[in-house]
Image (cartoon, rainbow over all chains, first blue to last red; front, side, top):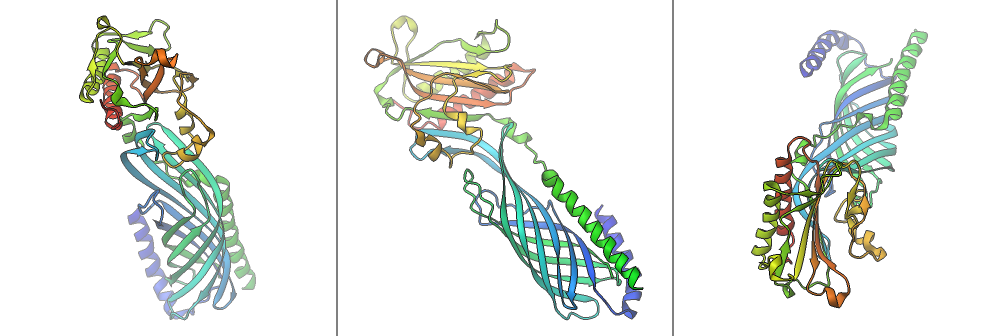
Length: 206
Length: 223
């Protein structure tokens, strides 16, 4: 699958390169589909980077250097916690088990971006997404699972880059910070934060 | 030209919108299912003590060589033989290592009585529930603080529902039964998890390991 994606990129680059050299780049609206890698921040529940994620966005330009749009992302974070004895503070109870901790996040947001001058092929940008985040938090032990789902407000400042292979197609990459107010009292989660890295393609609707 | 442009924009928006709506509708559908196979290798071991008990006040104990069995077949009330002995001996060895002395029944009443029960092949039925009932929905240890604020005290046997193999090992105060006018449970271990449906020796081994863990995590248990 990875080879196929790389091959598509190369072909698109070859096809697009000649076109791109002669045609001025115009962006009117575009959609972008991305593979998303994410690293959770400041939670003891889990810390491992997740490769299971994706992102989908549509942006429409309201000025030559400014766009507004809509976006969706998802991430499955998980981490194995080795067998441990958990003590109740007064010493009356102990539980020994191992766990698989999991957090699933699904932010959906409206976004706004500002685009800088980056040359003929490249367009760097910075922006923010604001919206809501659905999340599920699960603790698996033996054959059981304790699970809770909730909603929170989400803010996603980010910076990225568009690199065109042709007028209609190119590579998209960005890095951002996802902050959400999802809470889980049982798991002592007051917020959900992660840094994300997107890499994917964009398709220019112009 | 303008028409073509509008059509492309429209298509792009519709495609993104449809994908987005499908995405929203599915919510958890993109969630990756974790691999939980390793979690089944060991049982969950939960221990509970009476905080008022002073375990050094007791010297002797007794446990039967048979194990109570709760199973779907009405004839399976007691487990005897090598597998029962394996589990009972694990209790005896751990108690001896903690400084207590085994007192056979013929030598009179012991200070402590222990009872081991294995619940197997039960479709959503079990005994000796109580404090861990709240555990299913709330991940330990952080939730405990509040869950027990309601004045809950020591558990007594009752009926709950499971779909798994559960073993319980309870320690009772025989020494003070006359003074207390009842037999107080001083300590309990509940060991639960998936059981093999075909190999009882595997289940006995799982339970033996869990018994050892129950004593290991109960550091306050000593003469």
